[in-house]
Picture (cartoon, helix red, strand yellow):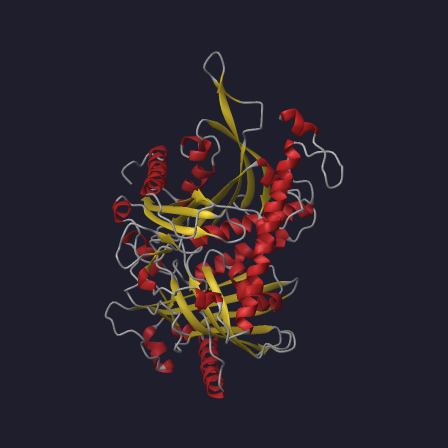
Length: 600
């Protein structure tokens, strides 16, 4: 049979047969092509649904389950049985459940008034700052003085609960991007998500007014946007807002973008526990394609959005959802965009496998997808699926993967968060150390891990995208372990990491050799390469001002495909959940032991 396969002739063209590597390459190409066609089909389906409102829509074909019945991506039956029916990836999508009605003239007038009021309030907060801002005695950041603010704004409190509180903060930076380009990104919900991948989990523009002309000609734009924000860990609740966003060029080269919550009768806003007072940014054009950005966040939060106690100090201070996080993320992403636009291989990069500028850009796009996918998975909103695992400090969820760019089937996600009495920088350096990786990483047990490519994604050495090769080990006669010469069984991992003033992230996705070959070529759109990332989020504990002092909050999260080619509704064996939970628990214990803090 092997001889016959070696000598087979292609019946269609009479050409020579594929070799083993050629067949695998061809199969991978067909998989990517199939994923691309499926994405095009879904895009066309959404287009038809949006433009044929009288016909049954995709959203109509999905039974919309109220938020209290969706637990971490699993729709439970009312009988509470152990039959799990994973929903599609990450639950109902905004495009499926948001069906806005057309705006009337009264609606447009009301939205215009809301936006104009928000812009005027934000101007006063930006331009007369000494009058309204005081230094916080908790973390030294500037917060709005409540008494001064209430005198001029006459703001109405939106939560009567005694546990409700107000969060306010401001920050400023200069970033290497033209102001007009930055404004355009803020007004595009997809680019908005890409600009803040570690904060904005989902976003959709519901209505847009005044944006029919190019932004360079018309800078008075009004939008209604739904967004879901989430940071750090499943133990931190996500925040949903329906906001009115207004953009005005208040003078040449100076734009103000104001956001304020708007509460129309939209049934799909499940989270009514937070309200955004006028917030936003002031963007000033500077020479040499730079911009100065001033940012203000001002939010009311009801305490029923209960944050776990280990994250409470962080989230209630300016380091949670405050202006500093938005500004630091903006700085990091603007640096990344500058480096990704380079069409040649810069001196800061080196690689055994990346030979062209286009290949470098392809790998960087794949790294951005890894970070985005990982952060989307971390929401795990709602009640815990498996109470027994929750008691053990592990949160578990199950979903049915059917999105392009992800392996199809049932995926179990698990996460655990812990406090470590070391600085975030120390924890980051430890997790980056390839010499000790085999002692905690399940993919690297009994191996040698080498770095075969490095791409700089920021000005700091900590911000980079790397390709790691995991070599199996073999024993010599003297029982010494050495790396095998053959690379046929090697695992490759694409790893994206960064460190900034609030913490860092290390996210990685395993790949086989054939998939990595596609990733470093320009044959396939990187958005169709299947990935399933796992990793770490490293954060300061909110009690110190920098990552070089204070303690660390560490979140570990895994995603594992437990059943490929599974039907949409099927019973998931609890043994798979126990296995994934055990894996993450053992990883946490190994890390704690290696860091000499077993009692953390």
